[in-house]
Amino acid sequence: MKINGISNITSIDKLTKQATSIGTNKNATFENLLRSATMAIKETNQLSNAAKNAEISYAMGLTNSTHDLQIAQEKANIALQYTLAVRGAILDSYNQIMNIQF
Image (cartoon, rainbow, N blue to C red; front, side):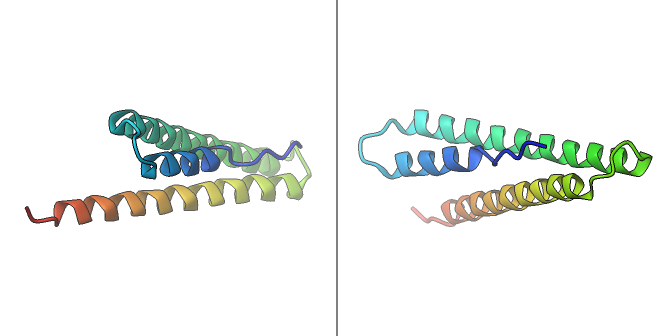
């Protein structure tokens, strides 16, 4: 089984660095950040589905590799934890913006 890393983590980091730089187009940066977050959610869903399929294959006896099953489950778990951490940070930022008094 080929082990691939979670690719969208680095793209979100690059976009947050772009957002802090001076002179960037704010709408384009937000659009890119939103697109990257959407891709991360889709990747999390794909990893979760792959883990579920690996569990079913193992339970039905189609594969005997507990190693591949554990890798698929851990990748799905790490992706979900990262997605929830990003969600929490976005919600905290939103709440801080809403509490700003003009």
